[in-house]
Image 1 (cartoon, rainbow, N blue to C red):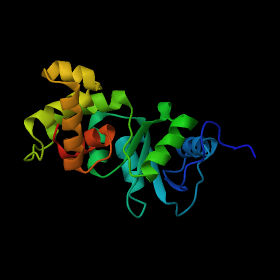
Image 2 (tube, rainbow, N blue to C red):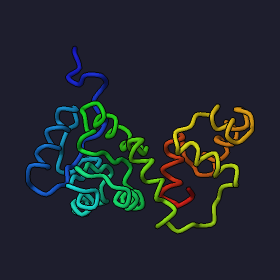
Image 3 (tube, helix red, strand yellow):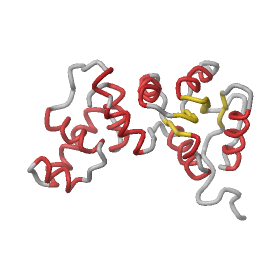
Image 4 (cartoon, one colour):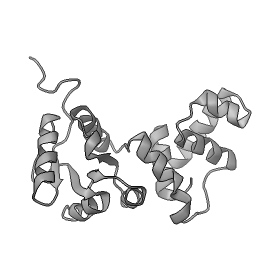
Length: 199
């Protein structure tokens, strides 16, 4: 039997769409359906949509636990940081919400994994120090330096060159910091660090 969902299986969870009635809600609902995502009044996940991330967060307050995934026409750093602090796992601009990305986004949110575009992440990190409190870090200086380079999109070899150490050392530092932050991968480590103000 052929899968009705090209390029991968359908996401595991139905979603509840939280958005003001209008064109954006209709557009996002259609995009989710084209991605093979089932819509339900009480889905396992909630998707909030709005003109901005802040608008989507306001729409998401109608859900029982706040949105897991935000889709907005405009994604700005301040709204993104607010969403991350509120526990949003996935942030997509409407322009990047292709069927494949929506499927991947719902799957990530379902598994508790964070996801956002590289451009959004870079813009968020560029202004992170200005408005986030700087808590006592659970990370060492070396772990913080490695994590900051990971957030810039650097690979292990580039990080090793920048810090004048071996790739093996970088892998060990990453392993230790992921265990300390209780995350499963590099993306989750960066998202946790941004939410917590560590970088």
